[in-house]
Amino acid sequence: GISYARLLHPMPPLTLISNGTNNDFYNTYTKDKINVSDVDFGFIQALTDNSFSLALADYKEAVKILLNREPELFSKIINQISEISFGRLLGDIDDFTKPVCTDFLIERNNIGNILSLFEQGTDLVGVIGSAFSGKTNLLYQFFSKVKSDKNFLFYIDCNDHNYSIFQQLSNHFTRNVKISVTKDKIREWLINSLADLSEGKFYLLIDNFNNDIPEGIKSEIIELIDIFKGENQHILYTIDEFNYKKLAYVENRQYKTIIGEKSKLIHLDELNDEEYIAANDFLYQKFRTPIEHGGHYTPEYREPRVLRHLVSLYGKDIQEGQFTKLDAVPNLKILDAIAANKTYTKLVHDLYAKITFCFFSEKKLRSE
Image (tube, rainbow, N blue to C red):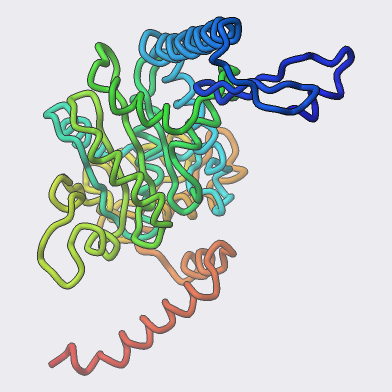
């Protein structure tokens, strides 16, 4: 600081080195620290200290106004973060590198069940489902249904999120309002202000929750679970059965962790009869590709991702007034078409080959 001060023209006689709290004066010419016990320097010291205190108070008040008195601003920023995150997951119906297609959304009844649990005061809801069961689609549907100017919905994909949750909020907030806010300030706001929300709710949406995410991120998620205790704060996460057992129970014990203790679980199963009928009507109205009568007995047609595959294959270039039908019982042609999709890696194909091998090798055992 003194070196830079000596480069100025004319050279200032005093140099103040400060961190905003402690203020030290130096003689710019001699580089010696000045003893501020002198009357005149005491006055300067008091004036400087007072100025920094006022500046700090004004800063805190500005942040308080932005965060507490203008919740719509913060909800806008948080919802914007989630929009961007979901945007990376959206794609065309035949782009299976993207899990969500806005033209192909089959609404699940579980959305209503989740909202009911939250209305009853549940803090933490876990959705358990296998791979490709539509967990990310469910979160996107929930986000689209609940988001508003007053509701805060913060989406985190644990497969894609590799740095501090609080830091991400801090970065977006700083970029939008042009005021530097640290992640500690974000944490302080969450702890002190969420309970005072008069309107709106804060939803934390955690996708692909698993036991292998970085410990720092896991710790922040658990901290947020502990923070979210009011009727206006809720956490919704998706997970598979294996990782739930890892996270919900203490290793080698039957004791439950905070996740296992507080979670209300919803299983994301195949389409039920009501959902299947609605989905088949959607296939006809939107894509002119309904399933023949009797298709409700086929388990594969109860899987939304399988239906998306089939529509992408057979629902194209259908002329006005025409339609096509999917066989009630999937044939080898349909199986070949799905297997040929490049989204499924060699590892997935190898796993299914092993399952098929086991099925035939155990045929005698099953018959007994």
